[in-house]
Image (tube, rainbow, N blue to C red; front, top):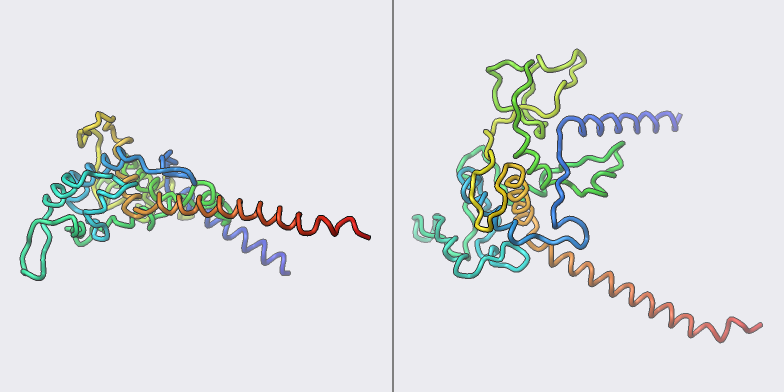
Length: 276
């Protein structure tokens, strides 16, 4: 009886995971910061910052990120004068003077300007792009949570709506967004969706060639989506490189300590091993 219940539970979890996996199409991007030895690409972060500034900041905020962090090593690493000039391009409401003033590097980015536009500071950690098969989380184990992949896939996931959808259905069809509305006309009799994704209220923000990069890098839609997703990963994990360095140092220390303990143990007990 116990085995039957356990098997039934596993199958139920497997079906749920498979449904979640097929509900949206998430592309596995090859980001430079992935893996234990990966690191942020400074040029990519600067390109992502430019995309955020010229496109995303019109609606979305970064209220947990300070302007001075743009100067930090391991991030966009803007020079101090450029960080100051960039901050001054934003207006911050100062409660002490009850008025707006130009921002300084010590201030944080403004919040979202629209009530229904989420703040993007932690978006790359708040969204999971990958879901493990059979409830085991194997995809997340080998690929990570997939937050940046989710963001990049969302940016590139706007497509023409399937022919089954009514023309007046609210939102835009996006193959990477699974939490939106879905017309009954595009469902099977059992309620399953015929197509991945759903309809999202946010209009398509990037089309490709939206910005011109100072380093001459390609600005097609795929690269723009990848760059802004990398930047939002940095806003969510600005100390990722320091954390990886500390972890690597700790592993090396433990390896050396293990070797020393082994040699010490061997030296102490070697004279006693051959005794009767």
